[in-house]
Amino acid sequence: MSTLDELVSKIKGYLKGMPLERVKLLTHEDFSRELGVDLKRLKPEWKDEVTRTLYKHGMSYRQIASILGRSMRDISRAVRGGCGGAWRRAPEGLTSVDVEVAKKAIQLMREGKVRNANDLVLELGLNLEQAKCLYDAIVDNERVITVSTVEAAQRIERSWKSVVKYSRRLEEEVESLKREVEECEKRAKDVVEGLKRDIEGEVKFVERFRGEAVKDLLKLQEVFTSLDIHVKTLMDFMSRVQELRERVERLEDGFKRLEECTSKIKEAEAGLKRMGMEISRLKGELNEMAVLKSLAYWLEVCLKPLTSSHYHYCRCAYEDEYGYCTVGWSAPLQGLEVKEVVEGGRKVYCVNVKDHRWICVTCPLYRPAWLNDFLKQVEKSSGSLKSGAELQYFDK
Image 1 (tube, rainbow, N blue to C red):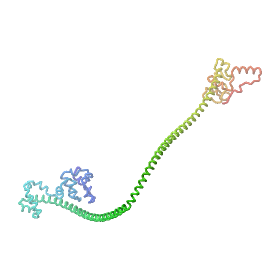
Image 2 (tube, helix red, strand yellow; image 1 turned 90 degrees about the vertical axis):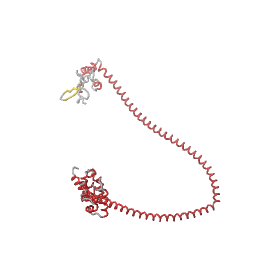
Image 3 (cartoon, rainbow, N blue to C red; image 1 turned 30 degrees about the vertical axis):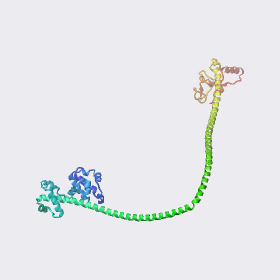
């Protein structure tokens, strides 16, 4: 906090509008938390001004002393003014006052014989300045002592009232306990009397039936002997039952293992079934592979003349000099080399059979050169065989 005025204004703002009951409950921690300043570390002259401010807002000397960390005497001097300045301005006057003289002045003031500084001058022979300063100091001290005494008396009175109230309550509780004790004693006497009567009756009953009880005991002894035999028999039976139970447990374990084996067998059967299906599929594939192998062999046999040195005699009559089949297709065949030819205003696609001899083998129009020469000789001789040119085009 930079200035005293700022601190005092902040304290007034904090206490403004606060109920008196709440003000009387404030502590040093509350002010430190609200103001951000430790009031116990203020300068003495700042503490005087803060003391007067707190006192004006209804705080007691003791509460202010707890908040500021000051004595009751300092609080009283700050609130009521005192003569602290006079003592500081005239130390030579005070140093000349004897302690015994000051004690006597205090005694005279308490007895009512001195009411002002002039009376001290007359009674003790002091000069006026010493008397005035001594009188003001005693008055200030007496005020502090009076306040402390009054507060202590009030606390003692409150404590005494509490003690009286508590003692009355204790007396009432003692009376109540006395009454309860008396009632308990009465009930205990009644219970004891009742127990005595019951015991006497039981004793009479026992004496009356003692003889019969002896006979019953003998009978019970015989019964116990018989029970002993039955118990032994029962124990033997229980041991046999335990053996049977163990056998049953072993059988249950066997059944469990049998169930596990059965489930494993079922799983194996399912696996065998899947293997059979897979074998059937593999057989089908093997059959297909055999057919393909036969077909490959047949193609190899058929292609052998077309790839041998006698190719001139086996060459197809529809193959041109460049190795393209003159039988045109209406659309190009995917994956084969073709060339586009326009004949009669129509596009046809001729396949390169020179690099794909297997096409000639599988073509229904395949005609070897030697057969074509033979047919031409026959045609010349008979003139009845038509030319194969009408089969010039084959639609896909």
